[in-house]
Amino acid sequence: MTTYDLVGVGIGPFNLSLAALSDGVPGLRTLFLDGKRAFSWHPGLLLEGTVLQVPFLADLVTMADPTSPWSYLNYLRSHDRMFPFFFSERFHIPRREYDHYCRWVAERLPSCRFDAEVTALEWDETAAAFAVTYRSSAGETARVLARQVVLGVGTQPVVPEPLRPLMTQAHAGRVLHSADYRVHRDRLAAAPDVTVIGAGQSGAEVVLDLLREGGPFVRWLARTPAFAPMEYSKIGLEHFTPDYISYFRGLPEAERERLVREQWQLYKGVSAETLADIHDELYERTIGGAEPPAALHPGVEVTAVSADADGYTLTCRHSPQEAVFQIRTSAVVSATGYAARRPAFLEPLSDLIDWDDKGRYQVDGSYRVALDPRVSGGIYVQNASLHTHGVGEPDLTLGAWRAATILNAVAGRTVLPVPDRVAWTTFGAPRVPEAAGVEEPRSVGSLR
Image (cartoon, rainbow, N blue to C red):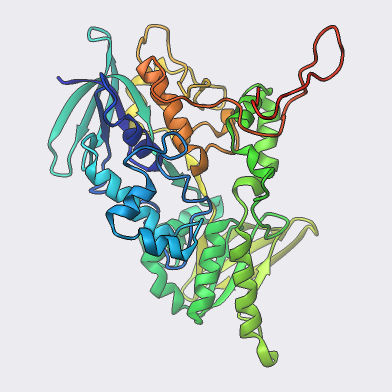
């Protein structure tokens, strides 16, 4: 079997970033595998007019290596779009173009192999390496060895428990997760009444798109106390820095759990522009005293759902008022986010992974998973350590920085320098010299 220094499982933006940054590194042999036929990024929500919530500099490589040929700017140059991009004065780029940019990189990197679904990951003591088994859609099976493995398998859609029994083919196109919205968009636009659940960006974009279609009455429900904008102040964004990750990792587990729950506006809020567009659409549609084509209900949780031939009855609870009420609707879109998953191919290694008491990975500062001491190789994870690294985990802003951190750990040397201190904010208590008993001065310029 061929032996690689690094095998990446899954080719989403985060592992694609690692593949791009590791391309051409001397002495490092890499392979990245994905079961899909080609790269795709949230295809169900690639709607016209939607933009990334992070600036274009948060591409696959620039925040770690702005000289890389795999940058978004080089993509623009390769497609003769540099001047149009310059004249557009965009800092936040179209989501469809980000998807196309990633596909451009994935198709050109020799280390990326699609139609290669990993089916098993085992530790081979004799070879002192991981045995990675994968197969194509035609049923052809192959096996390689990897000294280190990076899991970038992505997250799975989360659906509220009352809706789960209805996520079947019998209700396809009428009860769905927002990940599949684009597939069923025409059918939903033709429905008389659509209920969208979830106060994040995906829910807001579905609501706005349906309003612009001008067809159904749109009802927007959310458990959060408000349809709130994502925190986007310059100081607030410092939660998406290595400084905050280091601070967060040093907190007790209970405190980390509390912070992740309370900081939902940092990573689950809606862009202010999208909220403004929804408001403007409703304003335009109610000129002359017309009834609004939508209803917005924060603080509401769906507790039960029943189906009949004419649609669905949602039993809801308004938490602040402790009021229970019912809603009739023709279709339901659950824009309730995503969660990390434990892939089935890890089962042969399950007893060698040091899971925490909630069945999650225990991850160190280099994103390496705690394993049985008998395993000399390393397993690293991407976007699977929200509980240990904080709210920046799913954000594209830190993607290249994290990939460079993993790359340095895998290579055993500094391939790309990564900063530890970049924020103006001191998240923990200030350093106090023992003798002085006062805060130690900090040089802002050197960030030491």
